Image: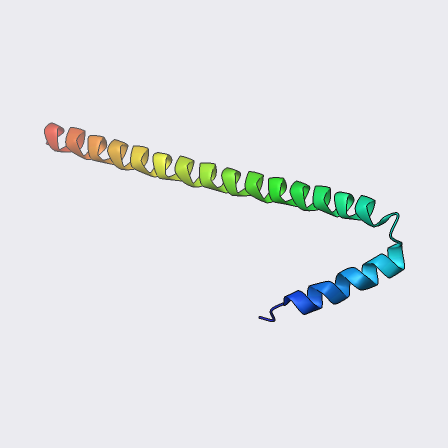
Length: 79
């Protein structure tokens, strides 16, 4: 995986200042920051939903095992 060093970041920022302009550059950084924040919140939300689904699946599996054992016990008692 390629790594970006400080020199590369400095070049990217310099080009961005030239292309966007020094007056609008802070506004662009703020907008990019809000996009990154939105993406992080979305990913966190998806991770929470997957975790909740995993916990629900484990609970359902445990309930099924308990019911299966109960049914086996009842069946053995009837015999």
